[in-house]
Amino acid sequence: MSSENANLNNYGFPTLKNDLILRAAKGESVDRVPVWIMRQAGRYLPEFREIRTKQSFFELCQNPQLACEVTLMPIDRYDLDAAIIFSDILVVPQALGMIVEMLPTKGPSFPAPLVVPADLEKLNKNCDVKKELKYVFDAITITRHALNGKVPLIGFSGAPWTLMSYMIEGGGSNTQSKAKAWLYKYPEESHELLKILTNVIIDYLVEQVVAGAQLLQVFESHAGSLDNQLFTKFALPYIRVISKLVREKLRERNVEPVPMIIFAKDGHFVLEELSQSHYEVVGLDWTIKPKQARQIVGESITLQGNFDPCALYANRDDLVKLTRDMLQKFGYKNYIANLGHGIYPDMEPESVKIFVDAVHKISQEMIQNDANK
Image (cartoon, rainbow, N blue to C red; front, side, top):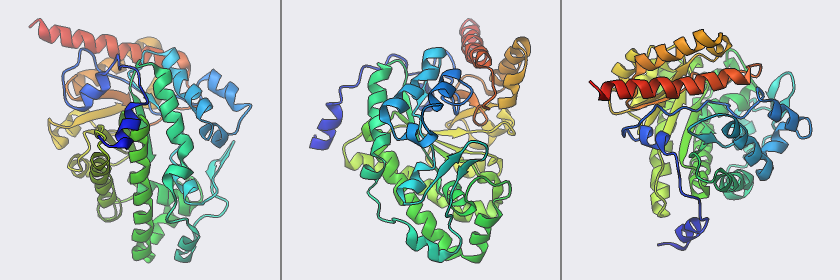
């Protein structure tokens, strides 16, 4: 055993009591469908809004103890089957030397975005990920202990294209036209930037597992801004190399690889390609028909999703009916329940409880009914 792996074992993480999501990710049998929610530790929770009155968003991210506290907020409230570390996909551009601010009414903002290829020289291309993002790894280790084995902990990163688009657009964008212009005008430099990001993301995800993450999710949040040709050329190859090299680098360090989830929002047109990219789980947004997705990806891939976040605005009875409908369409094998994207900030916390409890109750009934046939 390497000294590094010995150090990992010396973390002395508590024994895991609920491994439902890990079993589902691996295609193993479950006694109920596991459920978690993207952005489950966020602005819809009053306790999160309270803590945000005292710290800026990135101050929270960069404080391991506070990041742990926020990560645990939804776990303390709901019967969720996974925690996801409180952080942000834009810590990667920060590690590369870019300034990112989280503005109250605007969201993420880059005061000095990448405008022309010469701006790539401003990036810290050889950044020390272990040093620059140490606060994330510390937060993961602290949180693994604080969870006391209650549920697994998910780590994550943005995918290269999504991060590239933020870095060029300077924030959110409906069209991604500035970033897409790079793909057409500067294809070689676009690949250079995507390779820089990919290298950092690989090291970032590896270190998250070493620190204690038990699953990893890669967010390709801006997949829908690309057509099939652009996605296949500028996004898919990097998504694939991430899954391959993260596993290889973990094995080189005698650390067991963990299940990986790829979530490409509005990426219905590349579901087949994503299912062949060596991720155990493919996340779905709410625009995909569950049965159609299953036909495309096959039986061996676990699907995750795809409840419309807006459906949480429904009254209790309708919310339960909609949850039942989703579960009946997906079934309970090779499936993880989730929203089709992040929860909205004005959501009532009680609606989340109704959804989570309904997933468990209905799926248990489905499994028991099948067992009794």
